[in-house]
Structures are given as structure tokens and as C-alpha cells.
Amino acid sequence: MAAKLLAGLRVVSFEARRADELATMLARHGAEVVRAPALREERLAASPEALELARRLEAGEVDLVVLLTGVGTRALAAALGAGPRPGALLARTRIVARGPKPLAALRELGIAGAHPVPEPFTWRQVLEVVDGLGVPRGGLAAVQEYGAPVPGLVDGLVHRGLRVLSVPVYRWALPEDPRPLAAAAAALAGGASLPRRRRPRGPPPRRRARGGRVGRTCLQRSARGARDRARPGGVTAQDGAAGGARGGPRARPGRRQAGGVAAVR
Image (cartoon, one colour):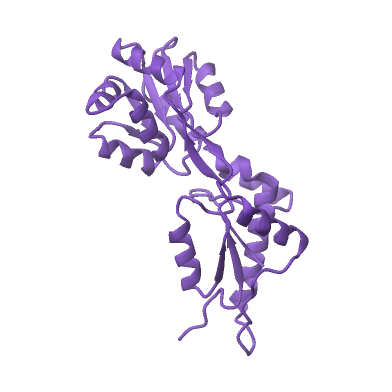
């Protein structure tokens, strides 16, 4: 049997929403996984912005709705009402869906006709799709926020002559039990010991050392720009090229860029 890439390594996973899936994948490659969820999504009560959006959709005053996340799409639908009402309201306007998760949520709601955003799913691609929809200047665009404002997207829509209604539906918060996160952060920052499994005997495969470097790079990237990669404007080919010029990791054009969700020690 081929040696497992992460055999003998401890991997701290900061993922929350898909924690089980990531931990299983890492363990399959031989890692000892320490779970330390970094964030949780806290759904907001129906906000004044959501109520205004519902009223304007009812009146046919919304020219565009931009959906940024699957969780946010479901939360927005819940804020718009119960039963078939959210689908009926959203079907009255143009919809731009940033990536497969909002599209999946729309399918669950029985809403068709959304305009998908191509990879790498940043706000730049959102604006490119909007440019092809013929939204009239002075029209109203509603943007489903995803835990924080999206200034690049909002500024781009305003620059195109649109009025923007930002609709917050959930926010990011610390995990309810922050102790695993605090312990993992302290261990990674200060070199403290986490439970460790002994490495197998014999010379390690060459790829194992490379995996360690990738893990350290991932952690460094997280420390420098986790917030930038978490938002829809994330890492792009242009940003990656600039990073490469500074000696940092480069993004590959046409490839989906993920934020740091795990660190290897």
C-alpha cells in the first residue's frame, strides 16, 4: 500500500460548516486531526432591509438580486416569508447566483432562471455577469450579504449607475465553545505541544515534506489575509500574480481559490 501523504502529522482543522467531511478526508490520508472551528454563522432576525426588499419585490421595484452564498440564500428566503411566497417574489426579478451553492438553494426553493457566476466566483465575475443583463441605470440592485459588507461589489454596482440595497441575513460569530480554537491558535503560534502521533520508521516520502511546507504556507496565508480570502472577492488570478511577485503564493488562473481551513505541524 502506498504511504499516506499526511501519515504521522497533526493537522488542525478550522472548518466549521463541513468539519466532518474535511476531518474524514484528512484522516484518510493518515493525519491526526485536531478540530478547532474558527467561525459559526449566526442567522439574524428579519431585518428592516429584508422587509424593505420584500415590499419592493412585491411592488416590482427590484431590478436585480445578487445571491452570494447558499446559506444566505436560504436565510433570505426565510426572511421573505413562508411557503411559496419567497419563490414567487424572487421570480419577479433578475437573479445572479455566485457559484453552485446559491444555485442549489434556489433549486430547493423551486426558482429557475438565475444567472450563474463563473469561476473563480469573486465579485469581479459577479459584475461581469451583471454587465450582460441590461439592468437599467438608476435601477435597484439588492445584495444578499454573507456575514459582512461587500464593498467591492457594492462600489462596482454604484459605479454602473445602480442603487444598492444591502440585505444582511446572517453574521459571523465565534464558536459557542471557543476553547478548542484558542488552544489550537496558541499551540500554532507559540510552538506548544498538541497530541502527536509518532512518525512511522524509515525515510519519509518526498511528498510528505512537501505537504508540510504546503501546510505552513497555508497557515501563513491565513494569518496574513484570512478575511480577504473569506469574502467573495477572495484570491484572484490578478491578486495571486501580485502575491507571487512579492514572494508569496501564486493563484492559478481558472482554479478555485480556497482560504486556509487547516494547518499542519
